[in-house]
Image 1 (cartoon, one colour):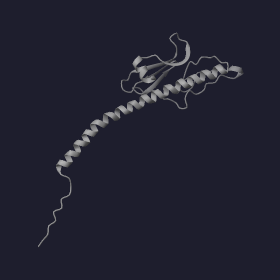
Image 2: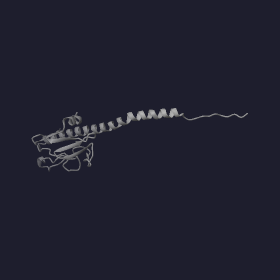
Image 3: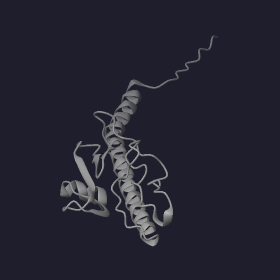
Image 4: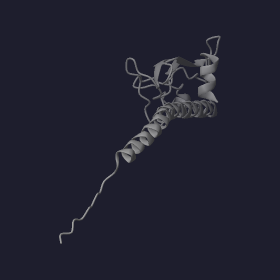
Length: 166
């Protein structure tokens, strides 16, 4: 007598379709979340840069005052190599030559043409291009009267300013 083994291994068509449907549902939920997370990360990076620039500007202003140098800070990219590279020259108090100290520890690159989530610099105005809408958010180190105030204020659209400064 001959024995036949009936070994069936594998998945039924119903099981395969069920798995494909579940993967499709998960992809439909996860992919939009991942895209939003990237934009949120770019906004968080911009907020961090703004906070760092404001802190560096305040520190530089106080250093100049402590040395008796009241030369206004007119640029945050005096060398033109990036958005926030070096402060404009100080007054060279006490027979010392004027110096220009770094703004941040790293160079923030200028936007490529058509870029988003990046900075452009044309002292005293610095603009950030939002990642989603492409709106320009403008910051200035001058007050409305043209005086160099030593502050890094948002002068653009109120909603966009709120997004980056709160």
